[in-house]
Length: 192
Image (cartoon, rainbow, N blue to C red; front, side, top):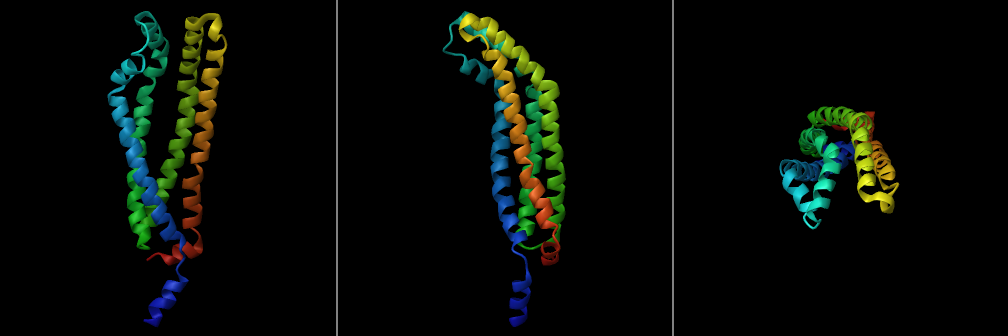
């Protein structure tokens, strides 16, 4: 009995804490991923619904103005599917880490690497694919709105792009913390 208490006292709490966090974030990730995938599947209906209160000529013009952005949704769907994979990895790693199982570290490291790549890819997609689409949408919205909305389109694209990049960079924090803290000597030695 005393030997088990000594072994438990020497174990780092980091694997268990990250195991619990992995389970929570993984569960949220699955819910978010399912929502994003369902939204992508029903995007045509959602687009119609979002412009339902507009007069017909305005509705058609708005939907046409937004089309370049709708055309990039395949990237959103791909990102959501990949996020689901990351969420499942988090859940698997979480179950293992809570039990101080070494395989949890390997799965968590895989999650960290893939998550960092995913965030970097998201930034590249925003800069290379979404930015031109957002610019085109902004210009179209300015044309539709005339003098009343002049400049809105010029602000619309950059605000969304900057927000997406900032959020992607902030979201790098968790996978990097996981990697560095779980691979510390004391954390690794706590796993069996």
